[in-house]
Image 1 (cartoon, rainbow, N blue to C red):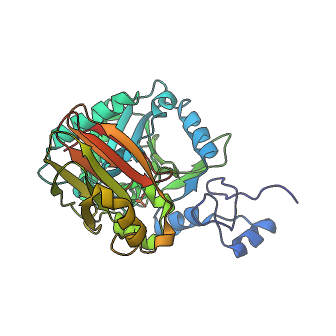
Image 2 (image 1 turned 180 degrees about the vertical axis):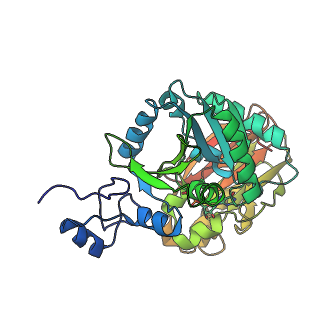
Length: 369
Ligand code: GDP
């Protein structure tokens, strides 16, 4: 028969093609479902048996449908972002979908930034950046989802913020949402507080519900992939090198005009013109080799050394050509390579050419650090 088979836990349409997409179940499970047995998708199965959530990705259309559902809720909306990839993970449309619901931003992976950076300053920066894309968060929190105590403190704060409402946690993939939700499950549940799954009416999307009190729940929603993220274009091996695992060590470079920095073979930063010798600071994974050269030698070096000296990528064939964008600063700024990190510039009227693989966002923003 041609009726779509659904997970009885979350309502997602079952499929055995892509483990990262909603409704995935092994082929054998699908056969059972076809024989009219009640079955769970893998995500709901793991949740029921191991009390543990798994990542799933949605299509853009499904993600929009889900956000649209939020506007009909009476809830506290929590947008989780990765502060190391802030511009790649902030959901600029979320304010519209939140409707009259209060919005809170949680900046995750605070452990990656230099410990010397003041949290109050970082919160202020996040608030300003959120305002620039039209978000009006009631509050901003910084956490590391890996830190159980930090998650516990966050829950205490959200408990005050929610004023008796449900909590919806929304984020793009890779911001650390599953890590957070798994911590919350382990903190908040006992035998009586059973974690359940259900679906958004009008869509076929899995959501996970963690009880907060007798009536209210915390809802974990599936994420969506951001195609502007660098990881989208890299091999799993290179993603590991590019993704920082511990506190980033900033590296300072004194450059003259017409000098270039290569961030492995993934990005390139040309200091074109400015006030002569200046210092620039890189904030990228410690595993990325940074190479300095003269700008007029850079094209040739890249052609000969991509995937060799200039690595990652580990294989020169793995990456598309670099695309060039010019910037001129009007004050202290970061030149951001989405998903890779950034290079900070001190002075106004500094001309930079920034290069990244086609499809990867390159942008200038107010300096974070
Ligand atoms: P999701 O796609 O949003 O559910 O993200 P995951 O929970 O799967 O996390 C994505 C990656 O970020 C994983 O490699 C996590 O280990 C890592 N991660 C999550 N939270 C943190 C954090 O607070 N600090 C650091 N350094 N890494 C984190």
